Length: 224
Image (cartoon, rainbow, N blue to C red; front, side, top):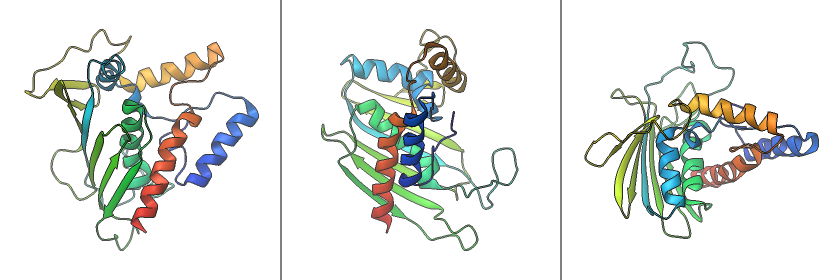
């Protein structure tokens, strides 16, 4: 199990996938959004044809001026809006639509003098079927922290925040029957262990994560 992202460059991600194929071991990326009950429910409804995604509008906001992790300890690598935080949404958008983005753009704000990374970023993606994704990211935000996903569909609007889901009018949606747990991280871990026991490819295998890494690489080229 590899914490998201499986690498911080396309070349290294390709090496991870190659190593998995050579060894035959179960290897999976920590793409938790695939497993949160909120996103799971919408995935099933999209797959069943009950919903058609028009736009996925996402805000990923933190306040971070030092390279510390969530536990307040120094990271061994530099956190990044594109290669870490955007990876969640890039993979989710392509997973929910079942398509790889055909059009992409990215804009970034000033580079931090010490960290060497942009502290604000805007990303846009479009798939061939017409659905678009609008993603705003910031390490400068002092308001509510975390990520908010707004699904604008042909048959309703839904707002997901981690394991919770409400409709466009803020009415809570019952997710208790979506899976055996209400915790996306637990469900992600369960999938990894089940794949090992059953000798199969897991959902969010490193091979399945590669299209997201390819799109991130294209977005990085946009920034250059």
